Image 1 (spheres, rainbow, N blue to C red):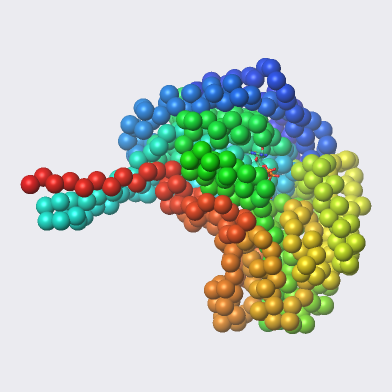
Image 2 (image 1 turned 135 degrees about the vertical axis):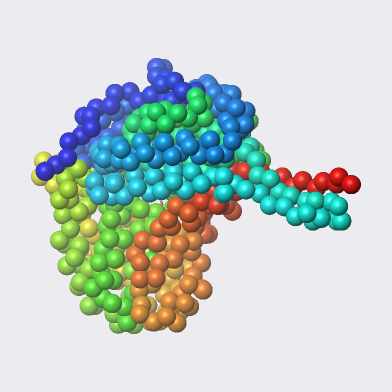
Length: 491
Ligand code: NAD
Protein backbone atom coordinates (compact mmCIF):
# COMPACT_ATOMS: atom_id res chain seq x y z
CA UNK A 1 0.00 0.00 0.00
CA UNK A 2 1.30 3.44 -0.94
CA UNK A 3 2.13 5.46 2.17
CA UNK A 4 0.15 8.67 2.68
CA UNK A 5 1.74 12.06 2.06
CA UNK A 6 2.26 13.97 5.30
CA UNK A 7 0.60 16.96 3.59
CA UNK A 8 -0.30 17.32 -0.07
CA UNK A 9 0.90 20.97 -0.09
CA UNK A 10 3.09 22.73 2.47
CA UNK A 11 2.27 26.28 1.43
CA UNK A 12 4.89 29.01 1.38
CA UNK A 13 7.86 27.71 3.37
CA UNK A 14 9.04 29.76 6.31
CA UNK A 15 12.42 30.62 7.73
CA UNK A 16 13.30 29.93 11.36
CA UNK A 17 15.12 32.97 12.74
CA UNK A 18 15.99 33.64 16.38
CA UNK A 19 13.41 31.07 17.52
CA UNK A 20 10.58 32.54 15.43
CA UNK A 21 8.99 31.26 12.23
CA UNK A 22 9.13 34.06 9.69
CA UNK A 23 7.34 34.34 6.40
CA UNK A 24 9.38 35.98 3.66
CA UNK A 25 6.53 37.92 2.05
CA UNK A 26 8.22 39.87 -0.71
CA UNK A 27 10.58 38.72 -3.32
CA UNK A 28 10.95 35.78 -5.58
CA UNK A 29 9.85 32.23 -4.83
CA UNK A 30 10.14 28.92 -6.66
CA UNK A 31 7.78 25.96 -6.86
CA UNK A 32 8.92 22.79 -5.06
CA UNK A 33 7.84 19.72 -7.00
CA UNK A 34 7.09 16.12 -6.06
CA UNK A 35 9.31 14.33 -8.62
CA UNK A 36 7.01 11.28 -8.80
CA UNK A 37 3.76 13.15 -9.49
CA UNK A 38 5.25 16.30 -11.10
CA UNK A 39 2.88 18.30 -8.87
CA UNK A 40 3.80 21.34 -6.80
CA UNK A 41 3.99 20.61 -3.06
CA UNK A 42 5.30 23.97 -1.75
CA UNK A 43 6.58 27.39 -2.69
CA UNK A 44 10.09 28.22 -1.49
CA UNK A 45 10.87 31.92 -1.02
CA UNK A 46 14.39 33.00 -1.92
CA UNK A 47 15.69 35.07 0.97
CA UNK A 48 17.07 38.45 0.00
CA UNK A 49 20.25 39.98 1.37
CA UNK A 50 18.32 41.89 4.09
CA UNK A 51 16.83 38.64 5.37
CA UNK A 52 20.31 37.12 5.52
CA UNK A 53 21.34 40.15 7.63
CA UNK A 54 18.50 39.33 10.01
CA UNK A 55 19.27 35.65 10.36
CA UNK A 56 23.02 36.19 10.90
CA UNK A 57 22.21 38.91 13.46
CA UNK A 58 19.98 36.46 15.36
CA UNK A 59 22.72 33.82 15.35
CA UNK A 60 25.32 36.37 16.43
CA UNK A 61 23.15 37.55 19.30
CA UNK A 62 22.67 33.99 20.57
CA UNK A 63 26.40 33.19 20.46
CA UNK A 64 27.72 34.61 23.80
CA UNK A 65 25.20 32.79 26.00
CA UNK A 66 25.42 29.55 24.03
CA UNK A 67 29.20 29.63 24.10
CA UNK A 68 29.06 30.06 27.89
CA UNK A 69 26.71 27.06 28.27
CA UNK A 70 28.81 24.11 29.55
CA UNK A 71 29.41 21.41 26.92
CA UNK A 72 27.50 18.76 28.87
CA UNK A 73 24.47 21.03 28.99
CA UNK A 74 24.74 21.64 25.27
CA UNK A 75 24.98 17.88 24.77
CA UNK A 76 21.69 17.39 26.63
CA UNK A 77 19.86 19.30 23.89
CA UNK A 78 21.19 16.74 21.44
CA UNK A 79 19.99 13.85 23.61
CA UNK A 80 16.52 15.43 23.52
CA UNK A 81 16.74 16.01 19.77
CA UNK A 82 17.72 12.40 19.14
CA UNK A 83 14.63 11.13 20.95
CA UNK A 84 12.39 13.51 19.01
CA UNK A 85 13.95 12.47 15.70
CA UNK A 86 13.42 8.81 16.59
CA UNK A 87 9.81 9.58 17.50
CA UNK A 88 9.19 11.36 14.18
CA UNK A 89 11.54 9.35 11.95
CA UNK A 90 8.62 8.03 9.91
CA UNK A 91 7.24 11.52 9.24
CA UNK A 92 10.67 12.87 8.29
CA UNK A 93 11.23 9.93 5.92
CA UNK A 94 7.84 10.37 4.24
CA UNK A 95 8.45 14.07 3.64
CA UNK A 96 11.90 13.32 2.17
CA UNK A 97 10.48 10.66 -0.13
CA UNK A 98 7.67 12.94 -1.30
CA UNK A 99 9.98 15.90 -1.89
CA UNK A 100 13.18 14.26 -3.18
CA UNK A 101 11.74 11.15 -4.83
CA UNK A 102 13.86 8.46 -3.16
CA UNK A 103 12.27 5.25 -1.89
CA UNK A 104 10.89 5.18 1.62
CA UNK A 105 13.58 2.71 2.63
CA UNK A 106 16.30 5.04 1.35
CA UNK A 107 14.64 7.96 3.13
CA UNK A 108 14.54 6.00 6.41
CA UNK A 109 18.24 5.28 5.97
CA UNK A 110 18.90 8.98 5.48
CA UNK A 111 17.04 9.90 8.68
CA UNK A 112 18.99 7.21 10.55
CA UNK A 113 22.30 8.67 9.33
CA UNK A 114 21.21 12.12 10.51
CA UNK A 115 20.31 10.71 13.94
CA UNK A 116 23.70 9.01 14.20
CA UNK A 117 25.42 12.37 13.76
CA UNK A 118 23.30 13.81 16.58
CA UNK A 119 24.36 10.85 18.74
CA UNK A 120 28.04 11.40 17.97
CA UNK A 121 27.81 15.17 18.52
CA UNK A 122 26.25 14.48 21.94
CA UNK A 123 29.68 13.18 22.97
CA UNK A 124 31.05 16.71 22.70
CA UNK A 125 32.56 16.97 26.20
CA UNK A 126 35.12 14.30 25.24
CA UNK A 127 35.37 15.23 21.55
CA UNK A 128 36.23 18.83 22.31
CA UNK A 129 38.77 18.29 25.08
CA UNK A 130 42.14 19.96 24.72
CA UNK A 131 45.45 18.63 25.97
CA UNK A 132 48.34 19.91 28.01
CA UNK A 133 51.73 19.11 29.44
CA UNK A 134 53.13 20.20 32.77
CA UNK A 135 56.61 21.72 32.24
CA UNK A 136 55.80 21.37 28.53
CA UNK A 137 57.48 24.65 27.58
CA UNK A 138 60.31 24.61 30.16
CA UNK A 139 60.79 23.80 33.85
CA UNK A 140 57.91 25.53 35.65
CA UNK A 141 56.31 26.61 32.38
CA UNK A 142 53.19 24.62 31.44
CA UNK A 143 51.72 24.41 27.97
CA UNK A 144 48.17 23.48 26.99
CA UNK A 145 45.73 23.63 24.11
CA UNK A 146 42.10 24.61 24.55
CA UNK A 147 39.43 24.43 21.82
CA UNK A 148 37.01 27.31 21.52
CA UNK A 149 34.01 28.07 19.29
CA UNK A 150 34.32 30.97 16.86
CA UNK A 151 30.82 32.40 16.34
CA UNK A 152 28.34 31.94 13.50
CA UNK A 153 28.79 29.19 10.89
CA UNK A 154 26.74 28.57 7.75
CA UNK A 155 25.82 25.38 5.88
CA UNK A 156 24.76 25.14 2.21
CA UNK A 157 23.50 21.71 1.20
CA UNK A 158 22.55 19.74 -1.95
CA UNK A 159 19.28 18.19 -3.07
CA UNK A 160 20.23 14.53 -2.98
CA UNK A 161 20.29 14.12 0.82
CA UNK A 162 18.09 17.02 1.94
CA UNK A 163 18.36 16.06 5.62
CA UNK A 164 21.52 14.02 6.17
CA UNK A 165 24.18 16.28 4.65
CA UNK A 166 23.14 19.15 6.92
CA UNK A 167 23.83 16.80 9.86
CA UNK A 168 27.44 16.20 8.80
CA UNK A 169 28.02 19.75 10.03
CA UNK A 170 25.51 21.63 12.15
CA UNK A 171 25.38 19.28 15.18
CA UNK A 172 29.16 19.60 15.55
CA UNK A 173 29.16 23.36 15.01
CA UNK A 174 26.45 23.84 17.62
CA UNK A 175 27.72 21.23 20.11
CA UNK A 176 31.09 23.01 20.16
CA UNK A 177 29.34 26.26 21.13
CA UNK A 178 28.91 28.04 17.81
CA UNK A 179 25.59 29.16 16.40
CA UNK A 180 24.36 28.18 12.95
CA UNK A 181 22.48 29.16 9.81
CA UNK A 182 21.39 26.39 7.45
CA UNK A 183 20.43 27.06 3.83
CA UNK A 184 19.08 23.84 2.31
CA UNK A 185 18.71 23.11 -1.41
CA UNK A 186 15.84 25.04 -2.97
CA UNK A 187 14.88 21.87 -4.85
CA UNK A 188 13.69 19.90 -1.80
CA UNK A 189 13.74 22.02 1.36
CA UNK A 190 10.42 20.86 2.85
CA UNK A 191 11.73 18.39 5.45
CA UNK A 192 13.36 21.22 7.41
CA UNK A 193 9.96 22.74 8.20
CA UNK A 194 9.35 19.69 10.38
CA UNK A 195 12.98 19.25 11.42
CA UNK A 196 13.22 22.75 12.85
CA UNK A 197 10.04 22.20 14.85
CA UNK A 198 11.88 19.31 16.49
CA UNK A 199 14.92 21.55 17.09
CA UNK A 200 12.57 24.04 18.75
CA UNK A 201 10.92 21.29 20.84
CA UNK A 202 14.33 19.97 21.93
CA UNK A 203 14.93 23.30 23.67
CA UNK A 204 17.80 24.84 21.73
CA UNK A 205 17.74 28.51 22.76
CA UNK A 206 16.43 30.99 20.16
CA UNK A 207 19.04 31.93 17.55
CA UNK A 208 21.31 28.94 18.13
CA UNK A 209 20.11 27.02 15.06
CA UNK A 210 18.48 29.00 12.23
CA UNK A 211 16.98 28.17 8.85
CA UNK A 212 16.97 30.39 5.79
CA UNK A 213 15.56 29.30 2.44
CA UNK A 214 16.99 30.47 -0.84
CA UNK A 215 19.32 29.67 -3.72
CA UNK A 216 22.56 31.14 -5.14
CA UNK A 217 22.13 34.76 -3.98
CA UNK A 218 21.12 33.72 -0.47
CA UNK A 219 24.19 31.46 -0.25
CA UNK A 220 26.47 34.23 -1.48
CA UNK A 221 25.09 36.72 1.01
CA UNK A 222 25.79 34.21 3.79
CA UNK A 223 29.35 33.53 2.62
CA UNK A 224 30.04 37.27 2.31
CA UNK A 225 28.59 38.27 5.67
CA UNK A 226 31.40 39.54 7.90
CA UNK A 227 29.96 37.79 10.97
CA UNK A 228 29.92 34.37 9.33
CA UNK A 229 33.14 32.65 10.39
CA UNK A 230 33.07 29.75 7.99
CA UNK A 231 31.01 27.73 5.59
CA UNK A 232 30.33 24.04 5.01
CA UNK A 233 29.21 23.37 1.47
CA UNK A 234 28.20 20.22 -0.40
CA UNK A 235 27.05 20.21 -4.03
CA UNK A 236 28.43 20.10 -7.56
CA UNK A 237 32.12 20.68 -8.28
CA UNK A 238 31.83 24.03 -10.11
CA UNK A 239 29.82 25.50 -7.22
CA UNK A 240 32.07 23.89 -4.58
CA UNK A 241 35.07 25.54 -6.24
CA UNK A 242 33.30 28.91 -6.43
CA UNK A 243 32.24 28.74 -2.76
CA UNK A 244 35.74 27.72 -1.65
CA UNK A 245 37.30 30.61 -3.58
CA UNK A 246 34.69 33.10 -2.35
CA UNK A 247 35.10 32.10 1.30
CA UNK A 248 38.89 32.00 0.96
CA UNK A 249 39.00 35.48 -0.54
CA UNK A 250 37.24 36.72 2.59
CA UNK A 251 39.65 34.86 4.87
CA UNK A 252 37.07 32.36 6.07
CA UNK A 253 37.15 28.71 6.86
CA UNK A 254 35.57 26.52 4.19
CA UNK A 255 35.01 22.81 3.66
CA UNK A 256 33.44 22.15 0.26
CA UNK A 257 32.36 18.77 -1.05
CA UNK A 258 31.93 18.53 -4.83
CA UNK A 259 30.75 16.08 -7.47
CA UNK A 260 31.94 12.60 -8.28
CA UNK A 261 32.54 9.87 -10.80
CA UNK A 262 33.02 6.65 -8.87
CA UNK A 263 34.52 3.56 -10.47
CA UNK A 264 33.79 0.00 -9.38
CA UNK A 265 36.60 -2.37 -10.38
CA UNK A 266 35.55 -5.99 -10.86
CA UNK A 267 38.44 -8.47 -10.79
CA UNK A 268 38.15 -11.93 -12.35
CA UNK A 269 38.23 -13.59 -8.92
CA UNK A 270 35.33 -11.52 -7.51
CA UNK A 271 32.35 -13.38 -6.01
CA UNK A 272 30.07 -12.68 -8.92
CA UNK A 273 26.56 -12.79 -7.41
CA UNK A 274 27.46 -10.58 -4.47
CA UNK A 275 29.34 -8.20 -6.75
CA UNK A 276 26.37 -7.86 -9.10
CA UNK A 277 24.08 -7.16 -6.14
CA UNK A 278 26.47 -4.49 -4.81
CA UNK A 279 26.88 -2.89 -8.24
CA UNK A 280 23.11 -2.72 -8.80
CA UNK A 281 22.62 -1.02 -5.45
CA UNK A 282 25.50 1.37 -6.01
CA UNK A 283 24.50 2.37 -9.56
CA UNK A 284 20.73 2.51 -9.20
CA UNK A 285 20.11 3.22 -5.50
CA UNK A 286 18.57 6.68 -5.16
CA UNK A 287 18.24 6.63 -8.96
CA UNK A 288 22.00 7.11 -9.20
CA UNK A 289 21.86 10.42 -7.31
CA UNK A 290 24.32 9.56 -4.56
CA UNK A 291 27.69 11.26 -4.52
CA UNK A 292 29.02 7.77 -3.74
CA UNK A 293 27.09 6.07 -6.56
CA UNK A 294 29.14 3.66 -8.62
CA UNK A 295 28.60 5.18 -12.02
CA UNK A 296 31.13 3.14 -13.99
CA UNK A 297 32.31 -0.44 -13.77
CA UNK A 298 35.80 -1.41 -14.88
CA UNK A 299 35.71 -5.09 -15.79
CA UNK A 300 39.22 -6.56 -15.61
CA UNK A 301 40.67 -9.45 -17.63
CA UNK A 302 37.79 -11.14 -19.35
CA UNK A 303 35.18 -10.82 -16.59
CA UNK A 304 33.16 -8.48 -18.80
CA UNK A 305 30.68 -10.68 -20.66
CA UNK A 306 29.42 -12.77 -17.75
CA UNK A 307 29.25 -9.69 -15.51
CA UNK A 308 27.40 -7.52 -18.02
CA UNK A 309 24.76 -10.13 -18.66
CA UNK A 310 24.07 -10.55 -14.93
CA UNK A 311 23.92 -6.82 -14.24
CA UNK A 312 21.63 -6.25 -17.19
CA UNK A 313 19.24 -8.96 -16.05
CA UNK A 314 19.24 -7.56 -12.51
CA UNK A 315 18.70 -3.98 -13.69
CA UNK A 316 15.76 -5.01 -15.86
CA UNK A 317 13.91 -6.35 -12.84
CA UNK A 318 14.14 -3.12 -10.82
CA UNK A 319 10.67 -1.69 -10.25
CA UNK A 320 10.25 2.00 -10.89
CA UNK A 321 7.64 3.95 -8.98
CA UNK A 322 6.78 6.49 -6.34
CA UNK A 323 9.13 6.45 -3.37
CA UNK A 324 6.13 6.27 -1.07
CA UNK A 325 5.19 2.87 -2.52
CA UNK A 326 7.14 0.30 -0.47
CA UNK A 327 7.22 -2.01 -3.51
CA UNK A 328 9.31 0.52 -5.46
CA UNK A 329 12.99 -0.30 -6.04
CA UNK A 330 13.90 2.97 -7.74
CA UNK A 331 12.26 6.39 -7.60
CA UNK A 332 12.37 9.24 -10.11
CA UNK A 333 15.23 11.71 -10.57
CA UNK A 334 14.73 15.01 -8.80
CA UNK A 335 13.45 17.30 -11.55
CA UNK A 336 12.46 17.62 -15.15
CA UNK A 337 15.80 19.35 -15.83
CA UNK A 338 17.67 16.45 -14.19
CA UNK A 339 15.76 13.96 -16.36
CA UNK A 340 16.67 15.91 -19.49
CA UNK A 341 20.31 16.15 -18.45
CA UNK A 342 20.61 12.43 -17.71
CA UNK A 343 18.91 11.49 -20.97
CA UNK A 344 21.14 13.83 -22.95
CA UNK A 345 24.18 12.04 -21.46
CA UNK A 346 22.76 8.73 -22.74
CA UNK A 347 22.42 10.30 -26.19
CA UNK A 348 25.96 11.60 -25.89
CA UNK A 349 27.31 8.17 -24.91
CA UNK A 350 25.69 6.61 -27.95
CA UNK A 351 27.12 9.31 -30.19
CA UNK A 352 30.58 8.82 -28.66
CA UNK A 353 30.45 5.14 -29.63
CA UNK A 354 29.20 3.44 -26.47
CA UNK A 355 26.69 0.58 -26.90
CA UNK A 356 23.30 0.91 -25.24
CA UNK A 357 22.94 -2.42 -23.43
CA UNK A 358 19.87 -1.18 -21.54
CA UNK A 359 17.92 1.98 -22.35
CA UNK A 360 15.84 3.61 -19.62
CA UNK A 361 14.89 6.72 -21.57
CA UNK A 362 11.40 5.57 -22.42
CA UNK A 363 10.47 4.32 -18.95
CA UNK A 364 7.05 5.32 -17.66
CA UNK A 365 5.13 4.55 -14.47
CA UNK A 366 1.35 4.12 -14.50
CA UNK A 367 -0.46 6.93 -12.61
CA UNK A 368 2.81 8.83 -12.01
CA UNK A 369 3.70 11.38 -14.71
CA UNK A 370 6.93 12.38 -12.90
CA UNK A 371 10.60 12.48 -13.84
CA UNK A 372 11.40 8.80 -14.31
CA UNK A 373 14.47 7.42 -16.04
CA UNK A 374 14.82 3.64 -16.09
CA UNK A 375 18.05 1.79 -15.29
CA UNK A 376 20.43 2.32 -18.19
CA UNK A 377 23.68 0.60 -19.16
CA UNK A 378 26.22 2.02 -21.57
CA UNK A 379 28.63 -0.73 -22.60
CA UNK A 380 31.91 -0.44 -24.52
CA UNK A 381 32.65 2.90 -22.85
CA UNK A 382 36.18 4.14 -23.48
CA UNK A 383 38.24 6.00 -20.90
CA UNK A 384 38.40 9.23 -22.88
CA UNK A 385 34.66 9.52 -23.58
CA UNK A 386 32.84 12.30 -21.78
CA UNK A 387 30.41 9.74 -20.32
CA UNK A 388 33.42 8.11 -18.63
CA UNK A 389 34.80 11.36 -17.25
CA UNK A 390 31.82 13.54 -16.34
CA UNK A 391 29.29 13.18 -13.57
CA UNK A 392 25.90 12.07 -14.94
CA UNK A 393 24.09 11.83 -11.56
CA UNK A 394 21.34 9.51 -12.70
CA UNK A 395 20.66 5.77 -13.12
CA UNK A 396 23.22 5.26 -15.88
CA UNK A 397 26.00 2.71 -15.49
CA UNK A 398 28.95 2.84 -17.86
CA UNK A 399 30.92 -0.36 -18.44
CA UNK A 400 34.60 -0.19 -19.37
CA UNK A 401 37.19 -2.91 -19.78
CA UNK A 402 40.75 -3.08 -18.50
CA UNK A 403 43.60 -5.54 -19.03
CA UNK A 404 44.96 -5.36 -15.52
CA UNK A 405 44.66 -3.68 -12.15
CA UNK A 406 47.22 -1.09 -13.34
CA UNK A 407 45.01 -0.28 -16.27
CA UNK A 408 41.94 0.01 -14.00
CA UNK A 409 43.76 2.36 -11.60
CA UNK A 410 44.81 4.50 -14.56
CA UNK A 411 41.15 4.75 -15.59
CA UNK A 412 40.20 5.92 -12.10
CA UNK A 413 42.94 8.52 -12.09
CA UNK A 414 41.88 9.71 -15.56
CA UNK A 415 38.86 11.32 -13.89
CA UNK A 416 39.27 14.69 -12.17
CA UNK A 417 37.06 13.47 -9.32
CA UNK A 418 38.26 11.52 -6.31
CA UNK A 419 35.23 10.88 -4.17
CA UNK A 420 35.06 7.08 -4.09
CA UNK A 421 36.18 3.88 -5.77
CA UNK A 422 35.61 0.21 -5.03
CA UNK A 423 37.25 -3.07 -5.88
CA UNK A 424 35.64 -6.50 -5.92
CA UNK A 425 38.17 -9.27 -5.38
CA UNK A 426 38.90 -12.24 -3.11
CA UNK A 427 42.65 -11.61 -3.20
CA UNK A 428 44.04 -9.69 -0.22
CA UNK A 429 47.14 -8.53 -2.06
CA UNK A 430 45.04 -7.03 -4.88
CA UNK A 431 42.80 -5.23 -2.40
CA UNK A 432 45.82 -3.94 -0.52
CA UNK A 433 47.41 -2.57 -3.65
CA UNK A 434 44.15 -0.86 -4.59
CA UNK A 435 43.89 0.70 -1.12
CA UNK A 436 47.43 1.95 -1.29
CA UNK A 437 47.39 3.41 -4.80
CA UNK A 438 43.94 4.84 -5.49
CA UNK A 439 43.65 8.59 -4.87
CA UNK A 440 40.05 8.81 -3.66
CA UNK A 441 38.58 9.87 -0.33
CA UNK A 442 36.39 6.80 0.24
CA UNK A 443 37.36 3.29 -0.82
CA UNK A 444 35.25 0.15 -0.88
CA UNK A 445 36.62 -3.38 -0.82
CA UNK A 446 33.76 -5.68 -1.81
CA UNK A 447 31.47 -2.78 -0.86
CA UNK A 448 29.58 -0.79 -3.49
CA UNK A 449 28.78 2.37 -1.51
CA UNK A 450 31.70 3.28 0.76
CA UNK A 451 29.75 5.67 3.02
CA UNK A 452 31.57 6.64 6.24
CA UNK A 453 29.58 6.30 9.43
CA UNK A 454 29.10 9.37 11.66
CA UNK A 455 32.34 9.07 13.68
CA UNK A 456 34.48 8.78 10.53
CA UNK A 457 35.20 11.77 8.28
CA UNK A 458 33.09 12.31 5.16
CA UNK A 459 35.21 13.99 2.55
CA UNK A 460 36.85 13.27 -0.77
CA UNK A 461 39.95 13.92 -2.84
CA UNK A 462 40.94 15.93 -5.93
CA UNK A 463 37.94 17.84 -7.43
CA UNK A 464 35.49 16.09 -5.11
CA UNK A 465 36.60 18.06 -2.06
CA UNK A 466 38.12 21.48 -1.41
CA UNK A 467 39.49 22.18 2.04
CA UNK A 468 41.27 20.11 4.61
CA UNK A 469 38.91 19.08 7.39
CA UNK A 470 35.93 16.95 6.45
CA UNK A 471 32.43 16.65 7.87
CA UNK A 472 31.36 14.34 10.72
CA UNK A 473 33.08 13.34 13.96
CA UNK A 474 36.46 14.65 15.08
CA UNK A 475 37.27 16.40 11.79
CA UNK A 476 34.09 18.46 12.07
CA UNK A 477 34.83 19.35 15.70
CA UNK A 478 38.23 20.69 14.63
CA UNK A 479 36.74 22.65 11.73
CA UNK A 480 34.34 24.43 14.07
CA UNK A 481 36.84 25.27 16.81
CA UNK A 482 39.89 27.41 17.28
CA UNK A 483 42.83 25.77 18.97
CA UNK A 484 44.36 28.18 21.43
CA UNK A 485 47.78 27.43 22.89
CA UNK A 486 48.31 28.67 26.43
CA UNK A 487 51.79 28.80 27.97
CA UNK A 488 51.85 29.67 31.66
CA UNK A 489 54.56 30.35 34.25
CA UNK A 490 53.58 30.51 37.93
CA UNK A 491 56.87 30.28 39.74
P1 NAD B 1 24.42 22.37 -6.60
O1 NAD B 1 25.87 22.68 -6.64
O2 NAD B 1 23.59 22.73 -7.76
O3 NAD B 1 23.74 23.09 -5.34
C1 NAD B 1 24.17 22.86 -4.02
C2 NAD B 1 23.78 24.02 -3.13
O4 NAD B 1 24.47 25.20 -3.56
C3 NAD B 1 22.30 24.40 -3.14
O5 NAD B 1 21.92 24.69 -1.82
C4 NAD B 1 22.25 25.64 -4.03
O6 NAD B 1 21.21 26.50 -3.69
C5 NAD B 1 23.59 26.29 -3.73
N1 NAD B 1 24.16 27.09 -4.82
C6 NAD B 1 23.92 27.00 -6.15
N2 NAD B 1 24.72 27.85 -6.83
C7 NAD B 1 25.49 28.48 -5.92
C8 NAD B 1 26.53 29.45 -6.01
N3 NAD B 1 26.95 29.93 -7.17
N4 NAD B 1 27.11 29.87 -4.86
C9 NAD B 1 26.73 29.37 -3.67
N5 NAD B 1 25.76 28.44 -3.52
C10 NAD B 1 25.14 28.00 -4.64
O7 NAD B 1 24.30 20.80 -6.28
P2 NAD B 1 23.00 19.88 -6.27
O8 NAD B 1 22.56 19.66 -7.68
O9 NAD B 1 22.01 20.36 -5.27
O10 NAD B 1 23.60 18.52 -5.68
C11 NAD B 1 24.13 17.50 -6.46
C12 NAD B 1 25.64 17.55 -6.45
O11 NAD B 1 26.12 17.41 -5.12
C13 NAD B 1 26.28 16.41 -7.23
O12 NAD B 1 27.35 16.92 -7.98
C14 NAD B 1 26.79 15.47 -6.15
O13 NAD B 1 27.88 14.66 -6.51
C15 NAD B 1 27.17 16.44 -5.08
N6 NAD B 1 27.26 15.83 -3.76
C16 NAD B 1 28.50 15.69 -3.22
C17 NAD B 1 28.65 15.09 -1.99
C18 NAD B 1 30.02 14.94 -1.38
O14 NAD B 1 30.12 14.51 -0.25
N7 NAD B 1 31.07 15.30 -2.08
C19 NAD B 1 27.52 14.68 -1.28
C20 NAD B 1 26.26 14.85 -1.86
C21 NAD B 1 26.15 15.44 -3.10
